[in-house]
Image 1: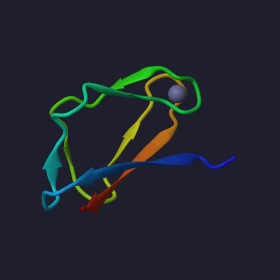
Image 2: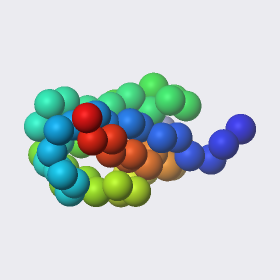
Image 3: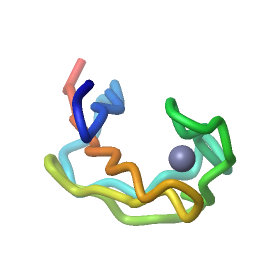
Image 4: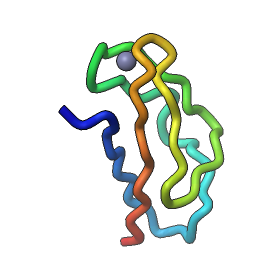
Length: 63
Ligand SMILES: [Zn+2]
């Protein structure tokens, strides 16, 4: 099992972007909600799940 997951964000904006379209994402391992509201993310930015410490990396795709 991978020790990280990729969370893809599709946007028309240039990174870094502010996450204002969702309040939280769910950990793919333990399903706990991770607060990402208004977080500034760039390609490769990441968050850790507070519960299981799983790493979630943001991949920004420009559309
Ligand atoms: Zn977790």
